[in-house]
Image (cartoon, rainbow, N blue to C red; front, side, top):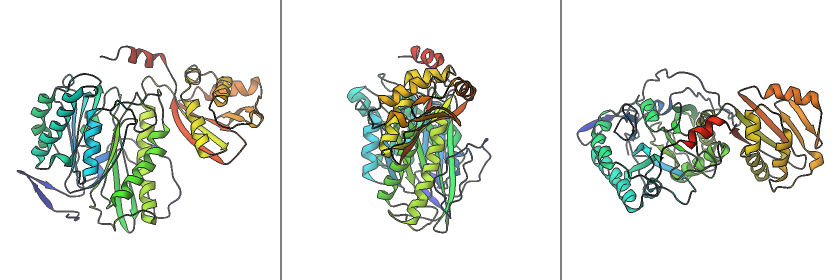
Length: 443
């Protein structure tokens, strides 16, 4: 494996140049959550995604799955061999793409990810599995790779056969379109009901080398933990030992994608993949080292950035709500309670109606099946406390809370008063627009 930052590698008739891409301006900054101080950690999270990662080429084109001119076929290629990790949906009716990609990740050196949108290729039987295998094979042939070096993603309508011949015909053009700055087209080509693309990137000095992580994601509906919750593709120029990369990705997913919920649904096709190509020339990152801790923080930063963008783009969403549970018996209890509150339709509709109906939240607390002492519970909207020692404070605080709920973003904080457990999630309101969109989603 060539770990140089520059150089060339022959793939079929094309010559891919591995070089650090220029950091092109890609728009607005997106706020990110900080994890620890990390003395040597300097994070930048401009909206530039995969295009910031050295040795990563990307493309997105229209192949004919969706109506023209919508992009519906994306390709991510590493110019060098990678270490790869993946986290996948727990839905037992998982799609063929999940089965094939899971198998290829275990096999070793992934070089490419091809993804179609507009068709999930789920619940399509043996034909669906054969189509996914063929998709990996003809993509590999076009790139002069082995089929098990290609991961496959699909997203869209469940139950319809994949138009595999359209994809096969489109792949040569998709390969020709590959370039270091193609990340935005790739991000656009993987979306379905999303209203916007989702990209994030960050850099940090790890063991004396500048390391970059970039990623793209799609998701607006069928968003709920139990990983995965959407499609997420990450890449880094760090050199990372395989077990360490899998551990870091699993941790990052738990802190980010598994901490958002829009509608309580977990899809059939979801996955988060991370490729590490080693072009940063850092000492290999291993478990239980300071470099591992810095890398894990950086990966979590990027994943949380993407997860929050998904929450903001939730189908029909008008509000994004952070639910924080403090002083639970354990962190697991805190996470469980936060998720019960965040998935309550009564709570979510009240938030849409800007109604500080804290009784619905107290009811959700009581049915979360975790230890509580009701007379110790406090509840607040942002800084406005509406419940103390399990009793409502009064009309004045309710009126102040109503003003909080007019905002696009706010926090519900619950203090249980029985322990040191703490966790948080992000959720959204539930609106008529969500119902209308999903009532008429095509089948």
